[in-house]
Length: 259
Image 1 (tube, rainbow, N blue to C red):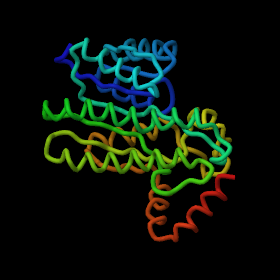
Image 2: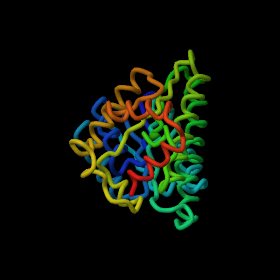
Image 3: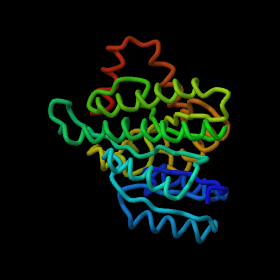
Image 4: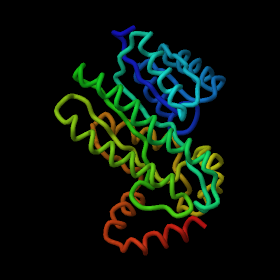
């Protein structure tokens, strides 16, 4: 098993993670699929095996729990598996005034969006460095480039993902291992329902891009070894513009747009 090409995709049951899994499968990569829903993962694994004739394993569990993340690593160790690709896609957001949202949900968000992503990156970047090759995608967000009133914790977690990924990518320069921070804007997915926020599709010119388009963009950026990949011209312009705008002005604009 160790001689075959393997990838781990977290949050693989839907959205960008699911589409990333399909793309990797189409290129003959065997997959370890992780998310909370075992039923959805089994269905996806069957589809990938039937369509691309790849080997696909399922690990169902709540990765916001450190013990579960450690179980995932041990599971891969038992398979004597070395990863060529890691897609840290699992994550979620929440919407509302910080003084009114629930700490329990925010704590799980911090654990999943930051702690688990960092842990898995550490484990597999270290492994990849020893092997001299590997590619990692950490799914950040267009939210990473500015503070986000009414989604304060979520925006902050994605800023962490962006800065963390860029820093470690620099440390890994020349080792054969790359890290790409994928920064999509609003995307068609179940994110909005999980965040208790109405979809923004009616407020965006042309609507939101599909998860498939964002995943394809991210895959191509990963294969090039890009450190930061911002999907969409509007999102790239916004990320650039906030560098020059007064900070208080930025938060007021974001606050207004969120309502």
